[in-house]
Length: 448
Image 1 (cartoon, rainbow, N blue to C red):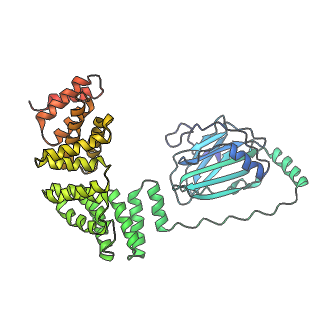
Image 2: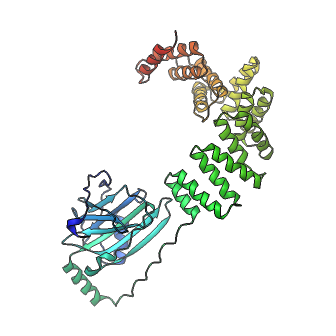
Image 3: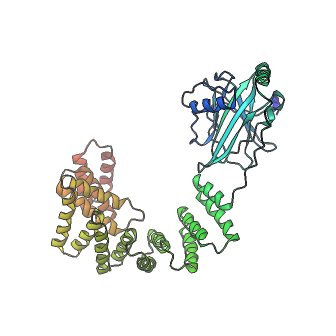
């Protein structure tokens, strides 16, 4: 591209930022073996997304302030330019993923590219390209296309003046036999639709990944594994209706497939569809009777439906399977307390405290927080958290954060008066806490 028509970006442009990278050692590139050794010493972080590289002269000295241009490998593409820093390094950290890849060019009146090593990785860290070789002054346009796949591309370039190139090439011809022509690397194969979906997932594009799997299902509509994977991806995009439709088709073809009903019920519970979720959870329990994640969801669903006897049986099974799980015992204790079986509940609370008596208050607090942090929280969850925070405060009445979390949990249950009492206690105990001002404002807004 002529210099007077070239479109440039400076190193401070909003699209490309010249990144500072670790200090480098000299990169000697007089032979292929020397190139490898120097690259091991010179570090480019290949976990970073983007195109990164460095320029050195034949003696391994970094070349600063050299313009490096990049453009998509297609007609009419805009070219962007950055300059190497004092360590000879350049970076294009925010590069769009394109099928055609990128062409790189060094814009220098003094230097040409002599030797190169290009290594690219896909977004899933799989090595995609590993090209190395040399160029002549008349064939600088033969630098391979950078097969950038949304992960990382790393380039090590040895630069030379035309004079240096001729001198060293002549010396090598005298000392070495005529080299065999380097084989042409085969063009990378096209990704399958499933591999394209994998790549989209690695980039966080779940919508695009689900679309690729939909294309794959048009070719293989009977592939149950593929359809189930698409259902899970749709759920990650919050398209739970689509996820449930795909999961239902999975069960039509594989009615005994474990885990499907559990996931479907979880999606339904997050949408408040507890009546629809219960039959799925009960069937899943027949298939996987000792799945504790399932038992927890099933106990919650029974409690919300008012089926306390069924909930108690499930909680007892859960606590028997995992006797060290504090949440299982706490849930069972809260259930017994809600039924007025206070002695039984107190016995379970004592078991919980005995597991770690020195930090029992912290244990109860952590149980309460873990309950509130779950997705799709229900009022039953809030009541379990309230029970945990109350036990923490019973053991340590000046536990400020327990008062705070208990206040918020009670607000979620609509119990305004006791909530305000614990929020005021938090402000009293921790007036310098950064959250104290926010809590004061909340207290002022609560109905008196």
